Length: 394
Image (cartoon, rainbow, N blue to C red):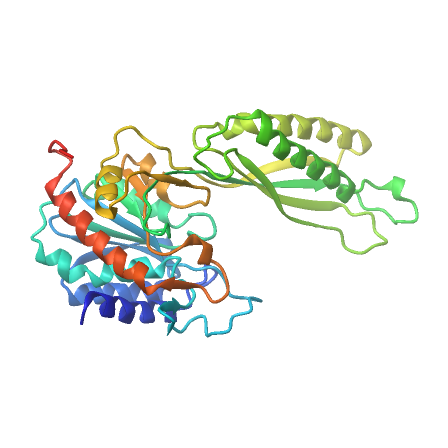
């Protein structure tokens, strides 16, 4: 079979696994492992949730330092309540588009990597190619963290990483981070016939949301901006609010989940200082009404951003392999910053468009898969010719 035929055959298998993040991913990792066994490739798994979720790390070539990591996540977002016109877990090709949940985000990338295993093995690699296929990326980039820790502790140290998130083949060298918070307002219940006997958690939540909206507006005008991003400033968004039981009880609890997506060069703690000052004052105010009441904010998750760096071998070679003249930036989150913090030169470059990700009837263009297969071959050859220990001549 040709490379694209092998890619599509593998992608059909990968899409058929319902790896929505709430589900275990053992079956898809087993499938990938058996495929690698058939090609005599060494691999291991790193647990995230033992018996339910795990990561897979594979090495093609010698087990030495200086390798190139190809990283992607196996989990996908839910299809619940989306108006799909096709079976989301069955590959379908129509008008040169490959449909299915995960086709673009990001099982198409994984299929391309796996399809080229015979090619990688044929090169007699001097520096290895690694696969790092993770879990639970879609719900906060949680799963990859134990894999990266294991890489730093016991595995040969790679030099660079390509994250295969969909970028239409563009080379991305910077992306915003994201930090998620829960603000919990604890009030006091009372009968609604006399609200003053209670403390209304939802009423205080309204003031919190009003302040968050003001901070979001201030970020547009008063904070550091980076015109390479769209939008060029750090953003803040209130995502969910829950509270109360019935209309005739003064609500004693309300929770607001919100996030900030800071520009990489910005300290998000300084960006949010205005909000936390307000929260502290509000906490004192609500406690004055009842000592049992409070306003508290807890950080739920943080995904570090990817920062542009002056010397980035992965960027240099990816631009050559993709035949691009300039890098780009993105505002969506990925695992890129986690690898960068481990000292790997990291870029994001993958097939397909992020505009199709997470949507009903998700698809990737056949031409994008074909182009990415070519990109992977080119960057592998470049990587062998420009080992990190050798000077880079462009």
